[in-house]
Image (cartoon, rainbow, N blue to C red; front, side, top):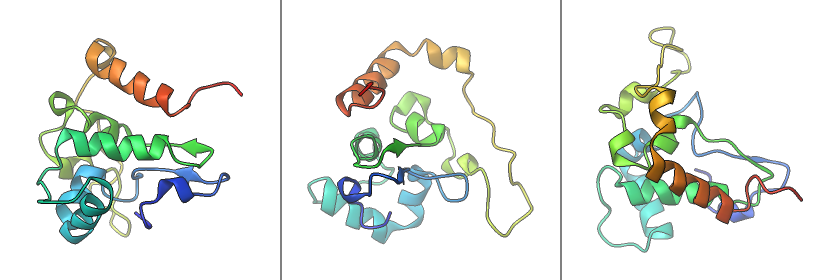
Length: 141
């Protein structure tokens, strides 16, 4: 998570909420409680850090990366789906793609939702489009 200040990323970098070689955001939140509390207190207004994290915190994480100063933002679909409670997987640990240094269970992740079903998630897709549009992602310069 570096320092979490996505607006300080260099332009020629990639902003990513997680990647194939680390825990997706929801799993990170539960594995690194100290880091989660620090993020919550620094970027979500502070107070009692919620477990989970709740949808709105996952949305904040994606929004911060979309609004980053990096030229590119590339986030795993697991982190996008965690923004919407009804799209979350039942087990955040099952969302891992690769465990560096291990040969067991790597590269076997499969999305628990069919792409054909995700296309029909109108509220979610509208929210995601608005988030990316507001961050000026996908805009031709």
